[in-house]
Image (tube, rainbow, N blue to C red):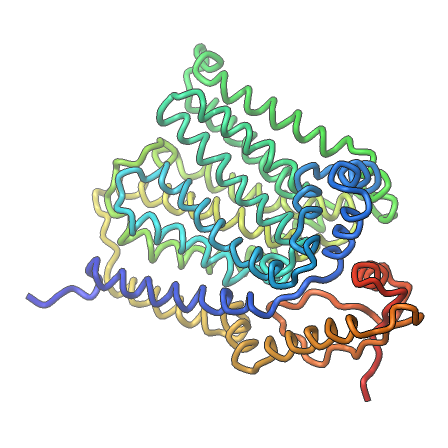
Length: 467
């Protein structure tokens, strides 16, 4: 008998090909990354004040990110090893995959290992391939250490919470609260999204629970909510927030609601078809008619999860406009996009289960699967996709030449007479879009230049045209 093209074996092969295409260029680029901007600033403060002193400084002078500040202070540059900076960043994608696998493993307890792994890889692949800006998410410690670790801690929080509801073993609740503490302390965006998601989870629990026994059955969830509130107040009430907000005179405008909506609309028009297509393709062969999932979330009315995904995505844009009076930076939008991917995948799964419950038919026609595969490959190879940009940075040798230029700069700095006033460094001629964030400027008084110079023991540094 002729083997069906969409057999489990062939689907695994197709999936592996897609995932290799998706991940390989991002991993190869770690060889060429370099620190910039805030990386040097946090390192200098740590080297001057030590761990405790630097945390007190940041909490009082800039932000309440009690975990994020620690992560950025303990960055690889404190050891004066650029190679260690690259290696440390290289492990972040694997931690993201592992944390995603952890939560998938709690939901689909009886699925085969390879299916759970593919789900995890698939979600992270969609995130990497279409996030707004890869440099601030994957290749810059000040962005990666703050925002991606927040996502990792978030996934462990939810995964342990699910594990508690599956087993009723109390220690998993306390582990979940511990990771909640870590999550909220990384940055305000993840904190806000975490709080909103827990709040909407509370609403769904209340609707689907018996009202007379709600508190008795879900008292530990209430403890989690109060913990989230307490941890959030530590961040919000930090004295440094008032100082930082003084840099944004246009903050706290009522038009923040409208501007958030417009940015939401602009991005959702791009994200919605991408995430939906990728989700539909995998559901058909991974989930099938598996009712042995560990939690009941897929049996509720899809409308609740639809609005959860839409609301949390819209609200993700709001803090930036409200606190700064300006669009949130790309590193923040990256996080909003991740939460959309995460919640929309759950919605699609929920919709799928809800649909087959009603119709007893879980088979998506093969011609639809073929169409989905074609669309996925086209999206991945489009010039606008991060995968194509990453491949281009490697193929054109932009990443290599960028790396070589900065290595030459480090060598010249070591040879430079530190008693001289200004170290003139040629402006970078080649900028790889995928991994480049910022460099020193022609203005030696720029704070980035000052941080860079101090780290390398220079009196001053400026970028000059190399004619």
